[in-house]
Amino acid sequence: MTLIKHCWYLLIFAISWCTTFIVTRKIIPWLRRRGVVGKDLNKPGHPEVPEMGGVTIVIGVYIGYLVAFMGRKYLKICPIDCVTIMAVVATILMVAMVGIFDDLKGLRKVTKAYIIMVAALPMMTLQMSRTTVMIPFVGEVEVGLFYPLILIPLGITGAANGFNMLGGFNGLEVSLGIVAMGALAVIAYYLNEITALVILIVAMGALLGILYYNRYPARIFIGDTGTFTIGTIIAVATIIGKFEFAGIIVMIPHFIELLVKGINRFPSRGWQGFYKEGKLYWYHPRSVGLCQWIMKITNGITEVRLVMVLVILEAMCGGIAISVTYFGLGK
Image (cartoon, rainbow, N blue to C red; front, side, top):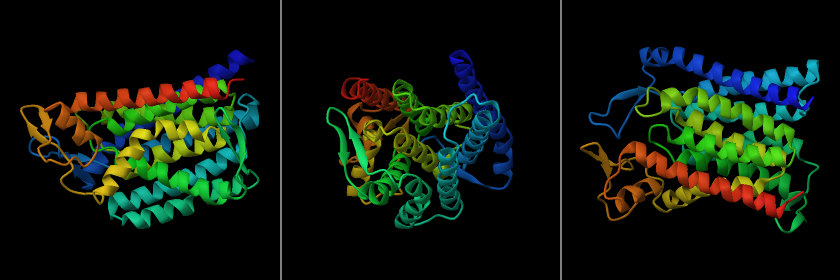
């Protein structure tokens, strides 16, 4: 039965990957024809690239969860909580809608934060009976209704907006999402949190499906639709799996970026590097984020290597999260 279960995990991963890969290939020319494009500010001439590709991530994730749901309902293979999956899907779809409106029309940052908090309602309702938080090396800590009413909406909003902050470079957001979810999937497997594991496996498949088109040189951007979705999935998976501490650790680079950009009043312009002979430079005395800081200390870096540096940083955070889980919550 264990072998069958692992094969099923591989199947839903593959279905999510194939769905996103195929839909992305079809949607790129469709978005370009309709003028849903953005400028690649870190390339000479600022070429236009189709954006809002995060829609294909949502589609891939939805199909993957649907197949997982069917496996549980009719084949009795995948021991997931179907009610939980439905609440997760509802939250993801509502957050994705915020991203779509933001990509097409543009929303105020405060407005986006408030709407995403409302989108957390399905998860808040699902976790209403939970009043404790598991802390490594300490154990369960009673926090009462503060957890479902305050921590859950703040966590989902913070993760969605935090993931949205650290981006703007080809393949960066998708690559960071894959690494973060991979680390959390290891934790979910170790803790035997099957529903959280399935949530992460399916999402990883979708992200790998779009990475081929989003990597340097990008043929599609995922937009806020994609970044909000990735951050939300990380948040809901850690909530369901009861390893929120690990989610906080893997999100450290994003929270740092959110803090730094907050100090700089969330600049919407002038954040990109200065392109010169294949490298990106940062000449301003004050950095507005991690990417600009890396450009500055390296005295110029290619976009590919910049993404690699941040992926390595994310992998280190993922390794720390796994280690803390193993030693702090060892079973």
